Image 1 (spheres, helix red, strand yellow):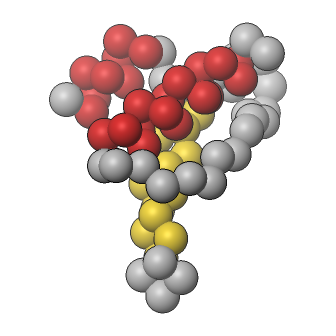
Image 2 (image 1 turned 45 degrees about the horizontal axis):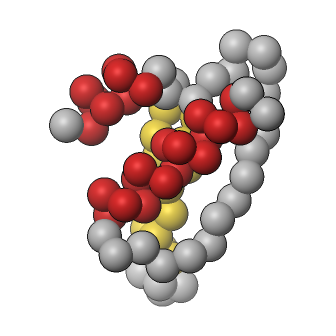
Length: 67
C-alpha cells in the first residue's frame, strides 16, 4: 500500500521517525526536489491513526511543491 501510494502521488521519499524517549513520532515527506532543495511546512498535531498522519504529510508536501 505504501509504495503504491508513493507511485500514484509522485513523492520522492517518505521517512518515518520515532524517538521513544521524547515520545515523538514524525513523518517527513519529500514530494519533489526537481527545482532544488526541499523546503516546506511543519505540522504538530495529534492524528487518530498513522494512516491519517501519512495522508496529511503527503498532502502538505505535495502542496508545498506548488506554493
